[in-house]
Image (cartoon, rainbow, N blue to C red; front, side, top):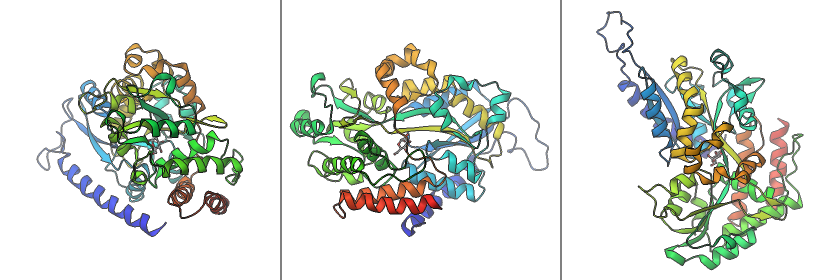
Length: 438
Ligand code: GLC
C-alpha cells in the first residue's frame, strides 16, 4: 500500500471509530436499558437498532426509504452512517473496520467493483440462505447487476440501482438539435455556450485522481474502441484506440471550457456546479436528474436535459456503475439487517429511491411503474434502458483497487502534463501486467 493512501486510510478510520463510539453509546435499546442483573423481557416493544452505512446521498432517496422502512418495521431502528463519498476512501474505511472484525456497522452499500474482493476477504455474509427462505425471485432483477454481486457461486449482495454515465445539459441554453453527438462537438458547443445564462463553465466532468476518474476514462477510451484488460484477463491497454480516447479526455480536461480546478472535481462538486447554474454541460450518473430538479436546493429546476454521452469514432459509451447492499459478517443483528436489506433492494425500497433519488432500478418491472416514470422521464426511453445494458464494466478482479490505482495515477499525470498519453499507456501496460500476474 502506498504511504499516502495508508495515511488517508488511518485518518478515515480514526473518524470512523469516533463516530462509531459516539453512536454505540446512543444505541441503547429498550432491552439493554434495563437495570443490571434483571433479565430483559422480550416484548414486541423491544427495538433493535441497526447501523446502515453508505456515502453521502445528495438526493432525498435514502432518507425517504429509511423512513418508510421504519414505519413498516416498528421493531427495527435504522441509524444512518455517512461514509466518505469518494468510493475509494469509503472502501478503505470498510476494509479497516472489517479487518478489525468490527460489528458496529450492520448493512453497507457496496460499489459494483467491490464484491469479488469483499467476498474473498470474507467481509460480508452470503445471502443465499435468506434469499431462499424468503423466496426472493432473483429473475426479477437485471441479470448483469445481479451477476456483479456474485462470486464463487454465491450471492454476496443484492443490487439496489444501476449507474451509467450520462450527459446533462441546460435545456434553456441548448436546443434539442444542438445537443452534441461527439466529443469534439461537445467541446465546440461548450465553448460557444459558456457564459450564457450566467454560466461559468461549458462542461464539467470528474477529473480528480479517484475512482470517478476511472469511470470517465473508461467512457472516453471505450468510445474509441479501446480497453484496459480483455475478457481473457490480458492487458490490452497499449493500443491506438486507447491512445485516441485518452488524448480526447486530456484535451477536454485541459481546455478552458472546464473549471480551472477540474482535477479536484468528484461527483459532489460536479452536482453542486450544475444545480447552482454554473455549467452548461455535465457528465454524471442518473441521480443527477432528481438532484437538479429538487426545488429545495437547485436553481435549474425544469431546465435539465439528458442525453447519451458524446461518441468517439466507435460510438457512445457509458461506464457501468451501481451499488448493492450487503451485510457485515460480524453484524450482531443479521436477521434485522436482512429485513432492511430485503426492503431496500426489493421493489418497495427501489421505488422510493427511484422517485426521490433518481436512481435507476435493478428490478425490471419498475421501469413500467407510472410514478417512477413521471419522476424520471428518461427511464421511459428504451434507449436509456438499452444504454444501461450496454454500459462498459471496469475490470472484475479481487485486486481491482490496484488496477484502479494504476489507471488513476497515470491518467492524472497525463492530464497534468507530467507524461504524454503514449507514456501513460506504456506505464499502465507494464504496471498492470505485474499486478495481473500476481
Ligand atoms: C458511482 C458509481 C460507482 C463508481 C463511482 C465512481 O457511485 O455507481 O460504481 O465507482 O460512481 O465515483
